Image (cartoon, rainbow, N blue to C red; front, side, top):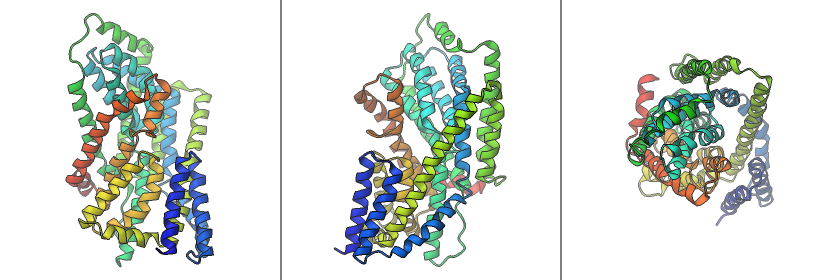
Length: 459
């Protein structure tokens, strides 16, 4: 075994150990590669001159216009969260449903898809759904286990519905990997893979997943109403909203939906870049929340936007250091060699990559997976003939599963923080929805047109 291989194994082991230890991911992705690089330099297996490229990489990240959209989309979500407009949207829609468990469950699913796409950050969506929809679902006769699974799954569905931070981050990495693979193949002017491709490609898979959730709810929730409780339930849901506020909420809700539709459409049809569309969307949400104007709302939204943006960009920068050391140790050639000998050629290699992403989703978050796994595997898969848009959506659906997989599923943590459900019951509650997500992933894998058809006719 060569020294480069030993160091690559040490790099992988060190990163995984650091992540599982609970240390800050940014420090892990910075310190472990640096230590391994120093060891490699001592053994003559790593050229320290490669570190000269780090400042250039950082400038490249900060000048990346696709990534400009991230803080603006986060700001949109935080404004909706702190203005409580998203909360009133849920109250309004749930109040319109009947007292049937099935009807209310489907209303919660529909509303949560809209809210999740609007807020972008699933923590706000899930905590709000748990606080408002959970009691109503219980009164409608929906079992706690079904309600918990629905709220966790529906609350995280917005990560697949454009505009989505997951799709923006994937767009950045898929585009870089596609250009790299094409240059190695001798094509120095490849057709770019843009955020518009991913926004349009994610529409059908997101619809498929939402429909699967709805079908599941249709069969597992009760049909019969509870006599005498229908008006009580609707009154309970509508009580926080005065008639005037209810009318205002309807108008604001329609405007939010309009913004959420126009932002990705403007990107897909080329009317605006992702950053331009996000800026218009953020301004639109600011105007919609003026009715709830409180300086504290905007202060909280801005501070939390800065904090979350700093974390995301910190991970992106530190992951680029990891990628630099990985390639400096010949890791890309090692991965290419390993994937090329897998039975089934491109499809076999793709299945292995999907399995790795699925397993990593149990222990690390989607940002780390995106910026660690994609730069390593995507160029190899693209050189083997895998369609980049199809691959990106497969990864997006796979990452969607990671929000629900215990023990570190983000949705599970947020739900447990606002409910008294036992961990064992919560894990059982999300199993059917994980199964539906895997089924959706299988549909996209077996029928690539679910991801590639819409971009082919729109872009």
